Image (cartoon, rainbow, N blue to C red):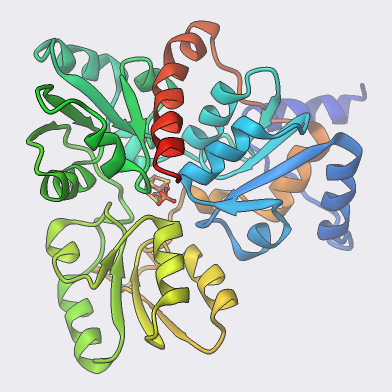
Length: 334
Ligand code: 13P
Ligand code: SF4
């Protein structure tokens, strides 16, 4: 291997993949070629850049992405999403190579629940069942009885016998929403998503007055005072479905703005207004999701780096919590 190739590889595995890409390259064509040559599949979350969504083999929410990762026969899974999602794919398909274009694509929600602190917290509730939102580290999943996503969370909670008490981690906003929705009183970990906590109640109210026909739709990671205003609450795939099926022609959307690409594609005649944040920056974009670019995607497929590597014990002890979630989802037809 040449010194340059070695340096590129090292940089890539370290997550500093900011190498120059020849600007004359047609990256769509190059990525398609690499997909065929390497039998690779690109799985992308709805919050990715539009051009990444457009080249992906599958675009979906966290549940759909894990289902695809579990069933694919590709040799390489290229995960256009964030770290915990790529880890989940690795846990479900440990024999496959799982790549993440930028290893630094993390998640504020996953970071808000460090496993060593959660372990101590859990010791106070030895009889409780631990339900963790999939937006958590692989190590947290080893301390979890069953995972959930925003699509299947209600089904997961309802699958737990009524006489069992529950700890819900790490998202306090989703947790509060689930307490209301299921009537189960749960011990909640105090974590949150930096994107979904930024929406301005006042600015949304103003928009609702300005566009009285518009439906206000929100992701359950939003705070309760925002959710209380919503006409519909759902996961990214739920929100997308609602905008397709509902007769309204305008929607105020309180979730990461990347989803609007698919909403607009599916309903070109409808208007989508991103719910405004509290300040003037573009904070309704997830800085972690947006670390992935088409250039990094291309380089990562070319060099097959950075790769997700997990200790065997993490896979062994973490995967049952995901498998249980997938079982509940399959039973519910999700
Ligand atoms: P879903 O796509 O499963 O609704 O999750 C949203 C999210 O925050 C992913 O990071
Ligand atoms: Fe994490 Fe929030 Fe970004 Fe999703 S949108 S990856 S929950 S920080």
